[in-house]
Amino acid sequence: MLDQKKIIDGINTACKVFFTESIFFLKPSRANRFSVEGDIMSKAINNYNNSSYEVNVLKWFSDFWIYVDIRFEDKNTFISLSIFQGLADDAFKHQLFRAEWDDYNKIDESHPQPHWHITSNQVIEKTFMELANMDKNSDTFIGLLAEEKSKIIDLTKMHFAMSGNWINNQTHVHNLNDENQIIKWFIGLFSHMKQQLLYVS
Image (cartoon, rainbow, N blue to C red; front, side, top):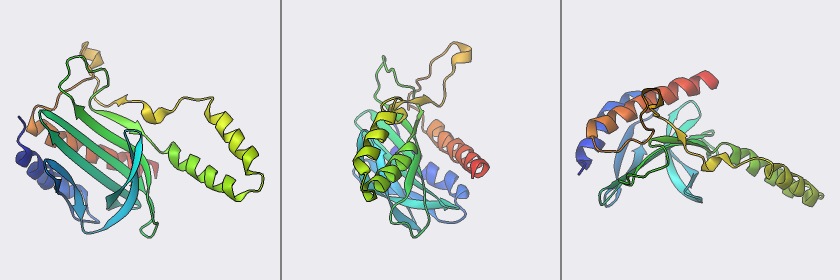
């Protein structure tokens, strides 16, 4: 059984250095569940498990915001970290992508753990739909969008492996069974994401 306190305290201590524009910490949100808190919070719509719901996000840097949710359920652990983009006064921030590590303790797990989900296309779709609703010929435009959308697969459902050890003939599924590895994963994740977001923005 994982030591929840060790994980949360370790993440809070090790990862605060990545937040120079705000104060980052994880705190209990419900029993055996922790989410991000801090001094500069805003609202966002989190797309997760085929549903959408409002969450509180923390300013990270520039116009990027972050949401973290860690759940400990029986012997299973679920980690979800989403990156959003938007100005401080935007009513809602746009979700760009999500990093997840779900441990169902299944020997036959087929989805890579940890993994990425790309969600930024939903922002563009929403914008097109809003524009279409302003147009008197919107039925034609909406039909055209639906037709074009049907030509490609929905990548939001795809699990992009984050840590596939294929070059050593090993798996892309890693269990959550070591507190220090989880803390190190968060450190590496924050470092990598910040570097790449700075690169593309």
